[in-house]
Image 1 (cartoon, rainbow, N blue to C red):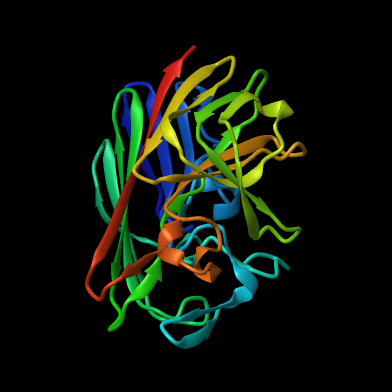
Image 2 (image 1 turned 60 degrees about the vertical axis):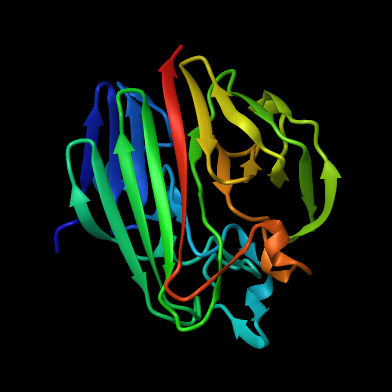
Length: 283
């Protein structure tokens, strides 16, 4: 079976997709410079090595692989090494179909039947649009179940860590977490402004305003989204960092009021859609 490879081009931008590997972005380049952590599509081995992948039907961690929804208890199967929680939903680990493809845009689709990893049926669609100076990605989830289901959306972009990689993001609050990564308390966070090498975040943030500005010696990026939350991950031992637009607080489904923390109760047949845009300039 041939590997489905998609490559979009517009101006100096080139986007490589792997629909079969979680609908993931294998790579994004401006000329020869990697914008995201980038691998040629044919060489990508899995979504966890990709430049970006979609988070559907929830972002980050679902605590201890179980939840209660509308009076019924559910469990989810392990999907992330020996992590005690289920992580990042299910769509990033499933093959997507190609709905359409042109020189500068493509649409992918994943149809989920209820299984051990997620007990509700849904359809997800991703649409990628490449312009001369930006990548736009649209994500939509439609509930195919006969009852409302909890839904959250997001993306997980990885940015290459370079000399003078720097973040400037206006936001107001941070969720601190326990040792397993579940949020425990809400504290003020007067924005993020600093070199990535000096940051130590693995947190969900609230009060995101304006573009997240991402800069290094080669590129200046502006990340905007319809999503109200950001997960920022700046590991000191990895050659990358992550700035992830998401629709809900991590593990919101276990909070006393999930809807107040961004989780949607999506009615049968209803659709939740979102977008993100990454504007790209050479320095």
